[in-house]
Length: 282
Image 1 (cartoon, rainbow, N blue to C red):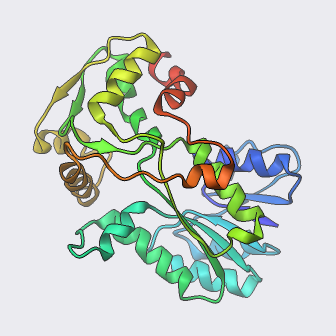
Image 2 (cartoon, helix red, strand yellow; image 1 turned 135 degrees about the vertical axis):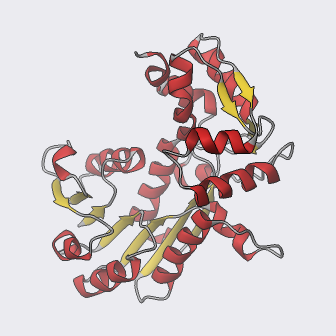
């Protein structure tokens, strides 16, 4: 049986549909299982990755896990997974961890959390496959409210490049990692097909939605104030540092999505078309 954690997330939802179509035995976990609406026959379970008391029931009878974990209790999760007989974990990590081992390592709280999860799994006897996506295209949903309100999107670094990757591509890569024995134990960096500035993403979003989407160039301090209720200060600082480092500098791309899924990574315009309701529905 495969356990999918973070069941209410976009990637987990896509992955669940793919694996269910494959006819595989599945269990999906969430801190709020009542909010889940899985396909018929899929088990749901209460699983709070910050609460080890929920781990035994969620892992009973499980042999493989798709895991998006916080670092706080990952050692407890790994220990319980090992006792339950799990022999393979696919970790949804981040390409930001690669910068922690560079000649000039980053001071990045979010990347450090992902790296701690990776290390906890790699130090265990459980075979571990790492998926390291770059920037999720879905980060653009943070712009939905100002777009619908007819207000400009606040951007501290309009010229900063990212490599937006569609959640469907990440889910399809995870499916491959969970079902193809040849991929077990691999480390895969996933990107979208293009390095785009935020300003370019705004332009493409406007073209897809038909809306007059604009942006305002704000200071990093102003952006932190505007997002303080939603983004912890340490993570906000890490994001700002990353955007500053890619301001005017295209980021590196991979063909890993195509290698794992058999098709090229979906462009940002496809993501925008798939999520047009997020920007147009009142």
